[in-house]
Length: 299
Image (tube, rainbow, N blue to C red; front, side, top):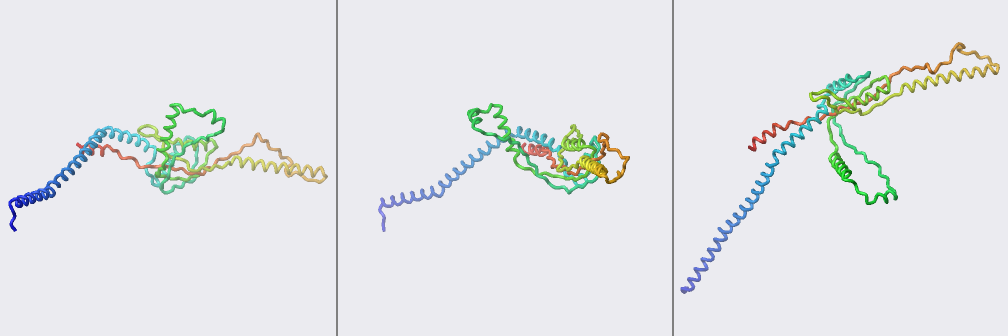
């Protein structure tokens, strides 16, 4: 089949169009897609660069905040004990007893193995009384700016401290004796206010009295004495009545004198059974070395 000149020209044009279309599909389109991906990557990298620059601006303030938090945390950690083995807890209890300035005789000590304890914070919530007249006279009354700040602060504190924290604990059970109830109360106060000397002065330590049982021996002795006295008085009155009835009954001790209550003196000690808990946490690591290493790496 012989094509005419016009047909050959038309065929060549069609072939050229097909070649151009295939070339555009095979070469130009991938380049456009690659350019689009490169543009997206560039925008992403630019965003990361801008974020890195913003973080770089926060670097110095962040370091200061970390160092400040460490200083505060380091001071709080001083209030706690390091993790104590059984013998170390026993020594810590002995150190506490030695520094008391009133007589306490410890008769028994039992040291438990180190364990953990969960601490939580409780907040006092006052009871709100509602009645119609109060609602009527207080409607529309808004809190002052100072009251609003206090309420916001309390809400933030409650939210921050609402979670429980588990820390180390060493429990020591003991039996002791003191000479008065006042000394017993002084012992409780001494546990609550226990402080030790350090390089930075006195630091209050985290210990608490878990349980304490107290026997009122003086009360028991007093009522035992009064019961015996009443028994003797009843016996004397009975013998006197029998003698009035003509029944001869002799006193067991005719020369005995009635006791004088003003001269009554009871000698006793107060026995205490209780347990003390020494709380411990791991000390925070000094962040200076890590911060310096990060600064050198960044430089």
